[in-house]
Image 1 (cartoon, rainbow, N blue to C red):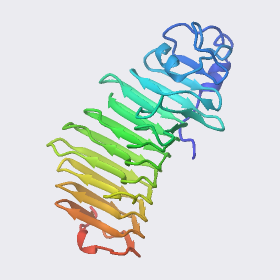
Image 2 (cartoon, rainbow, N blue to C red; image 1 turned 120 degrees about the vertical axis):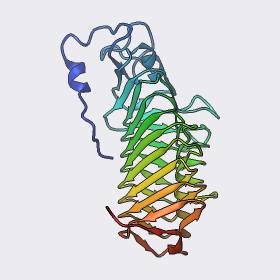
Image 3 (cartoon, one colour; image 1 turned 90 degrees about the vertical axis):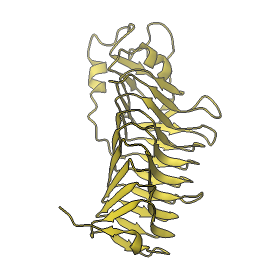
Length: 311
């Protein structure tokens, strides 16, 4: 996965004078597999051991820098924070046990949380990879989220925004990503995301209220999401759900794209191929801008597409 975000961590941590003990509410806290969770940890010379201990130390708006490959435990986030790993190997985040989540976000209404370069692993027993309960914005980049018994990412933050970039979400028993913002507005983007082999589907947007959940997906892939119904690569449900696909592929799913109960799904410059059914609408609308490839599905279902012109 390509690294899109500039990383200033190494130069900051190696600057003379920044390697001393880190006190409470530091803006930069180092975490390492060789570290120890103890008072005064957080410098390069004396890193903390777990992300949770470091999160509790860092000042709002600060950064947790993972120094090396290793296992760093589960994480509950309660403030604006960046969690960054930019090295080789994996920075592994795992739930504490069966039925637990890997990362939970209970941040304030104005808080921004960024997760970059993490491997969030459920081991077939964890519940959700990332659960966004509250906060202004969640950003996930250059990460892998896999093997959870529910969803890879669950987005339930009220009046929030999210972005998922250059990330693989795979092998989860529910959906790769499920957005359920509970009768409030939400906006999101997905770019360079791979939604692979998630049992119930790649991405699901649900909003049955008068509020809107609006998401744009670009240059992404949903493939092999078919084990359990509905098994849709991309699915919207409810009159408040709006999803736009640009330069995106839905392949080898039960359903390529699906719109239900008033949801609107727009497809442009995209490919629906090798699915059982290319498109399905049950009380929703699927708009096609006439520049898509819809071929070699068991059922191309062209009648489910509503042709519209580009503006």
